Image 1: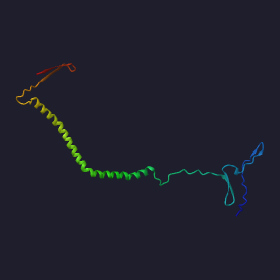
Image 2: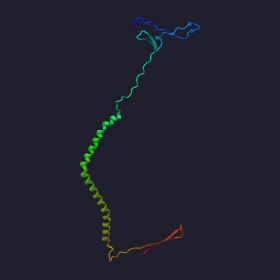
Image 3: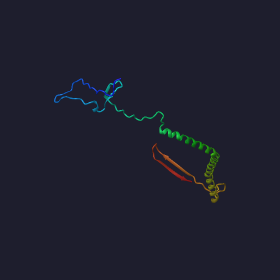
Image 4: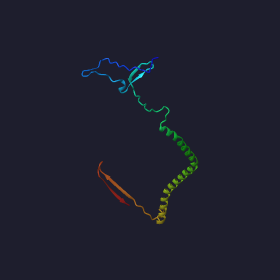
Amino acid sequence: MPDHAHAPTPVIHHPIPLHSPAHGAVVPAPPAALPAVTSVQLPDGRIVTGYTLTPTPPTPTHSVGSVPAWAKTTALLAPTVGGGIAAAGIGLSYAAPGLIAMSHALWSAAALLVATVIAVPLALRTARRALTGNGGGPGSSRTTTHITQNITATGLFGRANGTINHH
């Protein structure tokens, strides 16, 4: 096994020679001076120099087992709604006899209203005949008035003329 205590300095190979016309040869900077460049010694003793990549932080993703908030709310409200419907059904079953009685009372009230609309004018007519003495029967002194109307027109769009006669 090689001795790792004294690691050799890294060697950089440039295939094209670097010459500066004014100052001579340009010496490259060691890899440690460059940003994002690191030298790593492998277990067999070789030193490898390369760019280091900074890992990007992982984006938070939804886990497979996560449940959306709307689903949780719906799941919590479902028993409440079901219980409310059950309570309404029980309440209607207790109220059914009273509701039936109320419907019969409403039909009776409607029939009374119709009878009143018919009976009141008849009663008023009878009372008026009794007060005025015009019964309309035999021997009554009541007279009737006959009105006749004659209308004549000439042509399809002609002006109409008419007469009214009282007898």
